[in-house]
Length: 534
Image 1 (cartoon, rainbow, N blue to C red):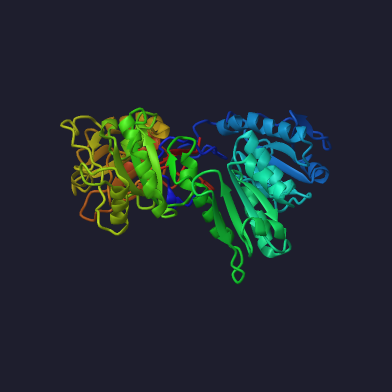
Image 2: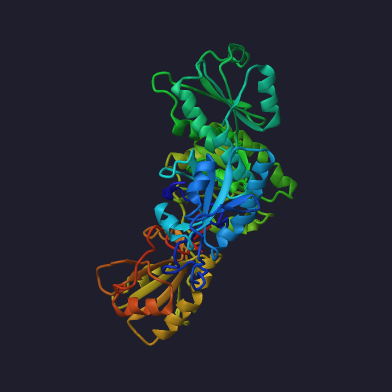
């Protein structure tokens, strides 16, 4: 998902599954142990095997590439927690593929113990997985699939075998459709057409859908088609959705991918940890949430009206039901709601993170829901922003407590240098650095021109300072310039102190960021709740 399209409903989806190659500033959470002298290796050796996974080294990789035309290699670090979590799933995937005699082999390389290989394949974080075909050592494919056994196995099956099943007759088509809730069939009059290659390329990576392919005229006739079309068949809502292929422009993989994601979604999706990733993968920027208590008959009676309004906004607004009686407190908190306020509606644009609420006491009917959506989309309703009340003792502790209502006054006090931590109560990385932040405040509590503060960014939204990751640290130097400096150094007392003592600059010997990091090390994403680093 693009950085701008950070999800905004689920706040705790778990870790991103990457450890940086070196400890770096601020992470990873687990330090690699002290290096031991490498054991002497024979100049020529056969690859070892552990639980159907080859154990490769600089000496054996070449041989493995020659002997295994389809080879998935995991570069791991023994100290990396995410690698340890992946290990049993990786072994299970190897067993699954071996049981069906699939023409693919799984292998692993200890990156820190094989620095030449890590450098050759530009490994900057662990685990990194690369797929090698036909012994080609110079252009491996980056693994982009799931981190669980079935997903790993399916990703590989769709590369060593057909990614779509060939359908010869109606019996084939019915068998495929009966077996799955969602099936995508490409109807192409010429299977040598370049559009077929585009279709099959997409099928390789859309692992949550089953794909079929046909050029049979009787199947075109059976399903009422006269030209090349990709059809999504589903056992719910409208039953099917057609994507005609433009013969002039051809089949665009991006357009088809968005179409499939949009139309494979149910008109109304119930929010849960299992559905959240698909909600955001649909790339629909506008979400309408109905908060209800599913244990109450009066609340459940509102669902048909919600569903009735949904088809008018297919592809434009995603309709989501949130059960306040389930484990969804983090969603309520994000919208500034309490469970007793249900039933109620909230509308959000996940790109701008702007939130909208209907008028107090507005009914939850199909007509009212339709009017509310149209008013928001048409600019007729203004967004709201969350802010807590200023605590009476906000300035009594070494770490000052900021909220939306006193942020401006404190952050831009021209007589003070203000260092602010924007945090989320649930963020593990915020909790990890909390002691260092308290120590910093205690150290500088007698400096009248320095303020150490914190702001719960999940309960206080600042239009001028959108926060997308936790913790986010910003320094507001004294003076009239309203200058703001983003802090990206190590999160320890010593480095914090050097930063303050130098007037908001990191000393030259302190690298600001870890080279090659996708996100700053040790960051929980504001909207997805995903953790990067460690």
